[in-house]
Image 1 (cartoon, rainbow, N blue to C red):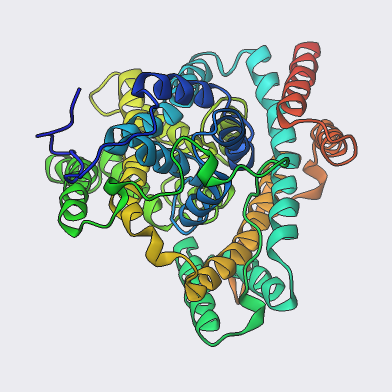
Image 2: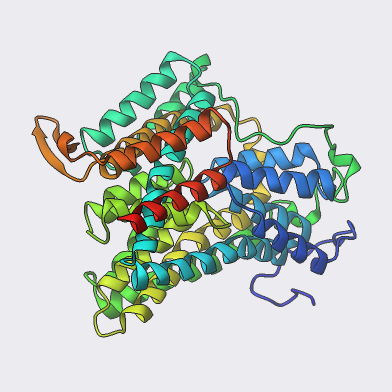
Length: 467
């Protein structure tokens, strides 16, 4: 089936892709990757690397890492964006759409089903116990994220200072997450332009070990496909179409329902989030918690942990936790619609405005990727942003700990602003024991995240049923 004449058709090419990979086989492989994509971006990228580079040898190590570095410069989930990029590289626009959509679909369906159970059966002791245990385990998982990202990003005192400044800004000063990211990015860019060695990046998520698969030895080869060459006219057309698909529903809801309707709030808030969420799912959570809990009042802090537990135990990007937030927001402010119908529409709307921009960043920008290669200033900006994200994730860990381990909090007013502190006498000793057990399992015994989450969920269920 040809894309010729389609509004999403690729620019004319002197030659078609000659790698010999049928689109049907690629679709089955992307479905397999989607079903195995547990464990956050690091695990998802490792799965893609193992299947696409080592097993299938469709692309090589150099091209895979170059695409990953580009995706890490973008807001949003880099693992899903990497899938879109490689799908587009192999099978043009159609390949990118298939790869990106399949990467999200299993997690969307799984979290939607869990969300129904949550609102319908959430007060049943068994369900309460499962989520009680998940909250304690998720706290340990977030601490692990702080350690993992921090060990990679905080290579010198300047990066540590940026992380501390970001934590102080968001925890004590209640500074907006987008402002923190913008300040870090501008500072890193200027530092990179000035040649400061502290801003030299290093890391990324890495890839699996073993013999390197060179581009020249793969199905795609080391030549640049014609459709991957910059074509400003085509990029403008694809950008216009994807912008319309993304923003037309937002504008329509605003005009039809008004600025104060819950669906308008969902559409505008998560569209804004899609533009500023550098740093992965845990940084996104800090931003969502700041706004969805504190500003909009859509859900409680403990429910944020429940949503993250769902995202951790289902395939797909961890950012899918935002779907749960949109579900609860619409469920509790359904207006004239039946609550479950409103919640379903809220989940769909959240997912749409979260992930459509990812297709825009890749399909419009990837043909120009070669211009970013070796750009030291952009690399320095990413390095500074990553350091700031460590502070943001640490804030998230503190926030989760306060609301997981303690039953009560009090608001403290100071010259810097207001912030929550726990009421010590309200500590939940069972939650503390479960969180410590999860931390020991992760850090001492190196157990997998799914194993730890499952074990804590089972223990939580036993505890609640025994009461």
